[in-house]
Length: 572
Image (cartoon, rainbow, N blue to C red; front, side, top):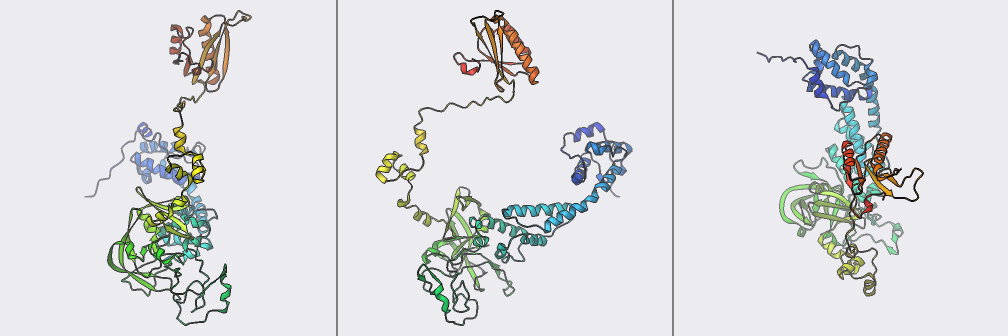
């Protein structure tokens, strides 16, 4: 026995109007908002328990109710053309036939914009990826699905020629989200302002070295991937002189490390499927003494793993399943050990160890998974709770600042005058210059605050925002000589917001209330708003029963100024 088919009960027009009243549904005005209007109408039908696609099966009463509901969300000019329809399904069919034909033109325009996408010179990588995602979502709403592979091709095709180094490092197995995150991380590097290649490969001042084996530049005989066949050095080596120091082809016992470290690589078919292949992007020709390379950590924007060459820097070092990593000479090394390192109090796990590595590398991608990255003074920093890992650019390499580097940086001979001022118990600037020969470049905030004799006057936060919100009244007199009609006093009114002023002469104080009524009536008729508050002094011409009753009838709040404070009434 099949399920029973429930029919929609008779709809109450008033109740239906109450249900949809105030909802932010769009009004149909043309082909531009047709799809959004149709989606809103489907939502409206669900709210009143009606199937949008089966409104032709409704009773005549329910059809009339739904037709009136649909007409509420049609623009006035367009509604005049659609008033002749007596059924909601006929109305929707007519509107769909009228406006759905334009979707083909819109789809062609969107596809043209998508396949012609290119990165503008001043456009950030985040904006480019956002534009691509927006176009793909718009086409998906028109039943045009862009595959992930096509999105990768379109994104890489939109990049300029200076991203060729990055494009060559892409693996076929990399997803669209992975490539997008790497591009965003690449764009956030401070060195990316000069050249993208400088953010991918660290610059190397020894890049002009000539190999004795193949004659190529940028690597030594020991690092040459070609078959080892010794060749005499070219006779043109004298042109590689810089500042009077002749370039001697690098010896193995040279203090400066000239090896190329790990570079971006792709897994090849020659590898065994049992070993997991990782790739990394690292420093090329690190300009550090050998003992410094053992302890320094380099930030790597393209690496997918952390790498270490010094086991003394790692804790919990333990054997793991071998992980294959390709180095610059095309060979693979296997990392069989993994440990943890703590930098600035932040524990970083899964750090691979191999003694033949050229430098210690921290993967930016992996580090961003456990921290939040931000830029401070054009240097990259990473935050985890209250702990911060900071970096510095040294010799065009991005170095992570560790405790050792911090201790070397804070030398007593490089302390600023402001620090000496604080160390010497906020000594006067003249005394500081006398004892140390240094002068402060900016004033000390703590000294300035200590010299303040009293607290500042609190700000007035009771400012008016419209005319007639606050009106001042005051009475002046007796004046001499009298006016032409014997006036001895005059009533002054001032609007706090507009500073509008009116003066009415009076023969006696008894006429004060009449003048107040005249001013309030005139101003309310001119402005179109009622007086909200009135402020006066404690004179008997204002502080009486008749005046209080008038303000109560007009619903005007009466305020009094304090004795001896004329500042509270601007007309005094």
